[in-house]
Image 1: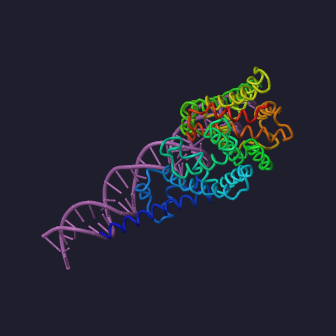
Image 2 (image 1 turned 135 degrees about the vertical axis):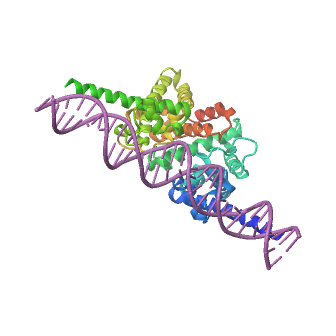
Length: 191
Length: 191
DNA sequence: TCCAATTCCTAGCGCTGCTAGATATGAGAG
DNA sequence: CTCTCATATCTAGCAGCGCTAGGAATTGGA
């Protein structure tokens, strides 16, 4: 039964092509430009084919988000690994987080502001999301003190997320970005 | 020229009716349910009338947001006024901010995550937004120390915003909300 | 009473996500 | 080698969206 194997492989490749096309288009022109018709044209199949792979547009965005979690986790891991000492680590990891969000705004949105049908604060969180969160947790562990580590991590994360989103939607003066980040980092750094 | 005065008054009333209808509908069913057709039906006029008042749907959402800034500012002012001492003020103002966002999620979204064509970090910020921001600034002034007050305020705001948005989109465990808020408040409280 | 200006509505455009039903393709049986 | 049937895929279309052109109705002033 080699033919069936080939067809399954081709199907998987096509599914990946959809995700990649959505990702690239979103990065280049934003999620509003990612329509099912354009995606279909991109992969050179008709629209309904998309729906044989994904339940709908939201599911495609969720798939892009899942890929994003892997990238973000990797970025955070390498930032902490290459930093000099626990105090510097907070600054480096924060910078890596912000850089990721700024360089891939559309993906960041899919991960953290849109596409809500992803399992987040539940049992079966996407593995890479857990990896990224764990990396944040290790980074702020020295300052957790008597507070619960998970709680402190979530709060630090929320600070980063707030800075990133308010910045990018024009709610914060672009010029003081570095200083704000420094303030946040200082509040979550071991002293 | 009393007739012209009457017509201008009626026009203003109709404009307010549009904003109120949009606000109520968004609060009840979310912004996706706020369509120009439903709005038109609500105010008992035809669709194109909306466009004689507002440039488009975004402008209507912006008008709702502007009303929201006034409410939020008032809530923050009264929270700080009625709190016992500067340390408690940070907690009270933070609680008031979060309560506003939780009780009026759709309005909060219009203010801070959607409708970007509002003037924010520029010269002519809406007055009530400036009021709210000033209130936050006064609250965190005791902890600003040698950091720039505006920068600290923006960072604190970002922390609140991050907690609120991640919470409501299901990215954070609902149960630890109070503890996270306490961690953030602690980091921005005078000691 | 008539005219002109303003106000308002009907109808429709191009787009969206999504789907039902028809058509093409290809593997297995005889 | 041919026929059959299941699977894969496409064409066409639905209902809804934001928005607008052009005509009808209403109103105020001469």
